[in-house]
Amino acid sequence: MEFNFAETNEAFIAGFDSGRSDYERMNGTISDGIPPCIVTNKILEDFLLAGLLDLRTHTENYTSHQKDLISRWYQSGVEKQEPNQSIALDELLEKNGIQIN
Image (cartoon, rainbow, N blue to C red; front, side):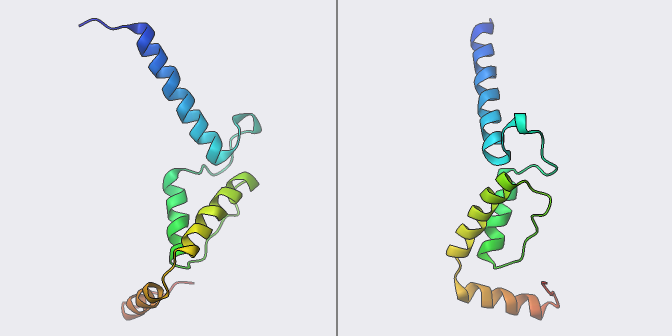
């Protein structure tokens, strides 16, 4: 088996560029420095779920760029809320002695 290092190098560069683009879309440009908290797709999905369930969130360690993105995901969850689901969740949590502040 023979490797084509030119193609491997191109694939590596393309992957790196894609990863950097994703990182900068969520966290701001690298030249602005590395923020204390890193936003990932998982973090954004958590904020979407929090909006869907009408849960309070904390964003004090995020940059303004990150907060803007997070608020859009949270708001998207709020817009998808179904009141009956929230009531059912509240009842289930209460039944199990779980309080959400």
